[in-house]
Amino acid sequence: MTLNLDMVGKKMDPVPFTYDEDRVILYALGIGAGVQELDFVYEKNLRVFPTFAVVPFIPSFLSSFVPQVKLNLLAVLHGEQKITLHKPIPTSGTIYTTTTFDSVYDKGDKGAMLNINFETRDENGDLLFENRAVIVDRSAGNFGGDRGPKSEIVTPPEGRDPDFRFEYATATDQAALYRLSGDKNPMHIDPEFARKGGFHRPILQGLCTFGFAGRAVLYGACNGDPARFKSFSVRFMNVVYPGDTLITEGWETDTGIYVIRTKTRDGRVVLGNAVAEVG
Image (cartoon, rainbow, N blue to C red; front, side):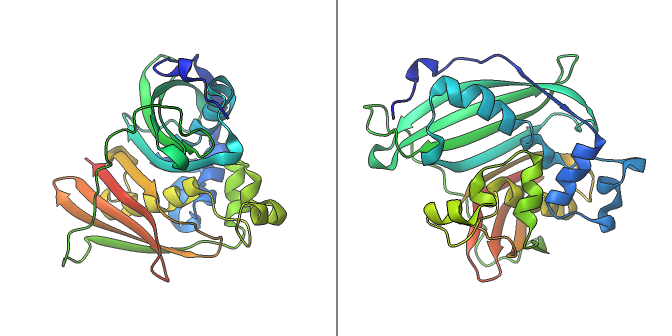
């Protein structure tokens, strides 16, 4: 399949996203929060998890980017995700996400690697947060483009215990719940579709794992205060199945900078090359 490379460097029209307190609470439940984290699941003093920033990313990506760039969703892999927060996310409202197709690299038989930026603003035009996504279209390589730079490798410091460690069990129906936040790929709910994709059963959404890890960062490095959470970037390294236990560890390597790693109980690293910045 051929990508529409004429879109490289172009900014797309803003996509509105309207949400309310129930949507915020549903997201919190989808990333494993419960009544022990009452302010995130009860409207009385409701706060928003910083990783909620990925929720409006999905409709903007699907409704605007995919059709204009002619991305082949059947061949897509989600490689990396980064969120940058500029202020706490409101508990309700209409926000607007503008997508820019920043660049594309030709990885040959491995496909085309697309770098996409998303800016989300409130109704007054103030910047709330940004998403940066790296998407691989496995069907679109060998188009004669630049192969791109080598990726920076970020690993935890050797011989040092982590500064924080959180262990969260995912539920066997975690993917079914998280999909109600907008990530409705059948790979996460339909056993037959998952088998066609090479998995023995439906897998957990990568952005759900991202949310579980973000909870660990919030409590381990921000003392539970969303206003201190500035950015979080990860590389998706391995598959997670609903019911897996996720262990997230963080090492402070500079003031307010943490190297993060999330693995399953059997030692598979599922989020790596990960960095969080806190204030």
